[in-house]
Figure 1 (cartoon, rainbow, N blue to C red):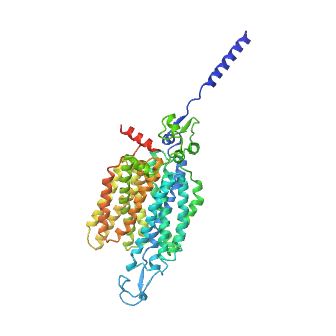
Figure 2 (cartoon, one colour):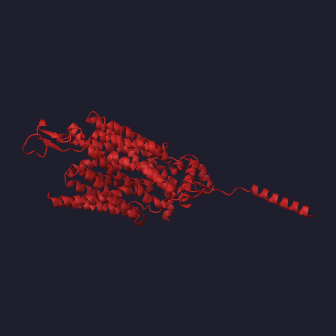
Figure 3 (cartoon, rainbow, N blue to C red):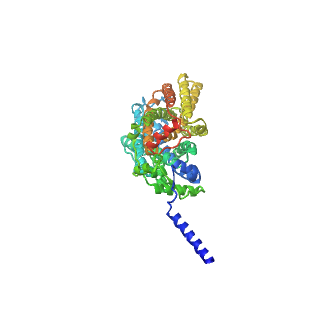
Length: 519
């Protein structure tokens, strides 16, 4: 009897096991990357901190290649060889009656005689660099969204910067120098946008704004370090070599420890690689992702849509222009970035006209920008992107206009104009930093770098024109900078707020998400 009961229980257990084995497994939970970071991997843990710092070091390299022109193209001190009063300009003095105090190798100006009627060539070579930046930003913005990826593009631009920077130091003539500066700008134009996107895309939505605002600390620190390097290496050829080698060291020592963006993996339909990276992020942050959880794009709402989206997502600036929503955003950001660059680079390059210690002035300017980044980072998630952008541009524009109306050549008037310029660059540095995170949040992953590349091109166009504004005199530049600041603030009023909104992956996801948000 007991044996029959035992057999009956065994048959029942086998039947239950057999029936449960026939049941389909529970479906996997499919989450977008923002949800995966927020719920499982962690929004900003040890992994994101390490990855962010390593990637954002590239911004210091961009500062080296961009601001080296302040020291390489400076006009060194000179003196007369004859006794008596020395004129303020060399133009009316015979060539053998004066000399450069530091020798002809101190800068490009002293080596190639870029004074008097040749002074325009200084601005020409600087404009050539920013023209290269404009071209490079567009090209590498597209390549980093396509097959090359964020990490691959960052590697290429750093190698280009190292090679072209060293070649610049061997320029036999001014025109070779200008050509190499264009090529160096071509690589530099892609550094900031590739590093920014690669550093911020693995960060969760609630921490992304503050992290994105922190990138410019590395840029300002790079400028301060450059001042010290330029003080130690007083010849322009040596300075180009010394400031180019760190790009090569970055490729060899830092790039191997940087990961590709999980968002790029996802839009390229490499879901397994994206999931492996998310699990690595979770492990480093002391968390764990369940095997039942997997990633999805934000436009994959059901199984049919997922099958239809089986091919790799790709996008270009054409896709941005096709959509009315993103087209308007792009036009506004192009205009705002252009005006911001005119003011920021104009006020920065104007340091050579202050007739003070150049190395100290550049260091103080770079340090003065940092409080702007702190204040912006603190207020970013309290006030939002839009009010902060309007306020910083308006602050800069108003004080630049005040500087325009301050006349006189006395020390007091010069000091007041200098204060207006410092406050102007304070506000514009904050806005310049904000624009990167604002642009990244306005466009989906599939076209994010292409859009960033396009607005960066607009910034470089503004940077090209900035030296031409600076040479117009003492008062007129302030009027131009003030008008640009106020106009930029007005245009910012037409942008949508992105605070606490998801970072979309595809154009379809953005359109659907924005419509649902409005409802």
